[in-house]
Length: 212
Image (cartoon, rainbow, N blue to C red; front, side, top):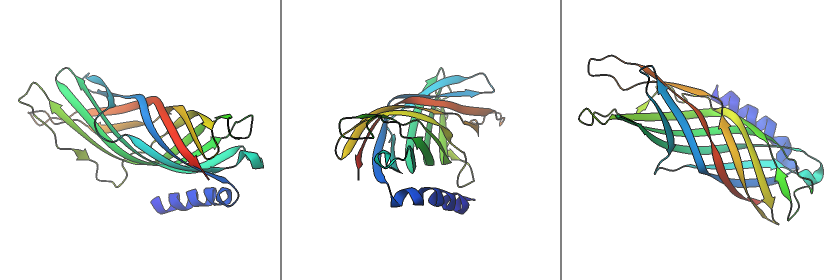
């Protein structure tokens, strides 16, 4: 499955690489959050913690040559934490995304111009999560990872605005994930378990990159 996905991404990107500008960028959250809820009625908002929250993408396209689309890939690391009454939550993930964007720039991405590049993304991810019960002697789960190599499928959309210079760009974007992540909750003292859901990861991000 992974090999087929890689071949598909390469086949979609390669034609653009040969006759295109290359945009290499770094993305980091200005403000973001994810919602957690479970079958016991617990709910919490998770926000970026002390871990690494950053994405690196490579996009190909050239508005000056008449192309109004971009293709590319992004690798991203997410680290979130949150707390609700007697429980704290932490989540870490690595994602590998294919991105398709429209390059809407009235001045063809020339120096001093703005660009609006709405995009969609789809990929694979590796998720690890951990819980700590604060009112039960600090009972803490091991950081849990599902047995599959990739255990969830991130997808969603992004709305970036960029200011272009001669060889670099800066900007901001709003990103929204539309997928839900189902997990098993920390077992109770009696051995019973409940399920939980992470969803609605959204936020504003700062973008900066170079242009070749």
